[in-house]
Length: 180
Image (cartoon, rainbow, N blue to C red; front, side, top):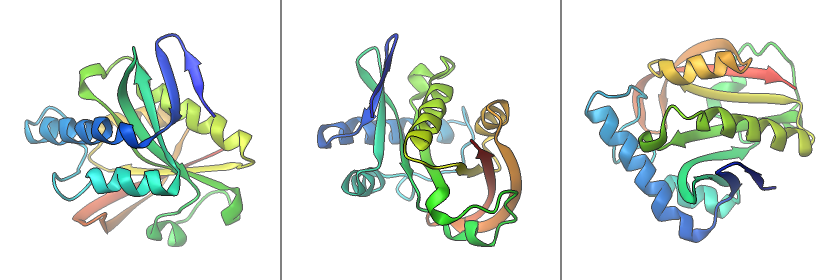
C-alpha cells in the first residue's frame, strides 16, 4: 500500500531508506539533548539504526517522503509490547484484530506541517485494508506533543504503565487505543 497526496508519499521502506531513517533518529536525539523536544528516547539505546533494520527485515517499516525527501518513518504490525497484555483495554480484541503503530518519527526539520497526523491516518487506512478493527499504540508520558496529536485524532489513553522500555529505564508508558 502506498499513499500519495500533495508533496507526500507514504510507502514501504526499502534498504536504501535506512540511512535517512537513522538520520531522523539522530535529529530527534539531538533535539532532545538540546531541550527542544521531550520524547524520552536515548541516543545509542533507542531508536537506533538496528531498530529500523529489524523492522525492514520484518517488512513492517514505512517511510514518509515530503517533497521527495524521507522525512518520517514508523512501524505498522500486530506485535504488541509486553506491557500491553496486562493493560485494561476498553475493547477486548483478539490478537488478530489488533494493529499497532510503533516508533513514529517525523524529522524536526519539517515538524508542524501535519506529517505526523498524515502518517497516523495512513496507519488507520492500512489497518482497515488489512482487516484490523482495534488500533493500539504507546508513547512516553513526557511526549506531550504526541499525546495531544493522538487525542485530537480520537485515541483514548487507557493507562500509564511504569516500565523499562526498549532498554530505557524509568519510562511511564502511555497506552492508547482506538476502535475503527
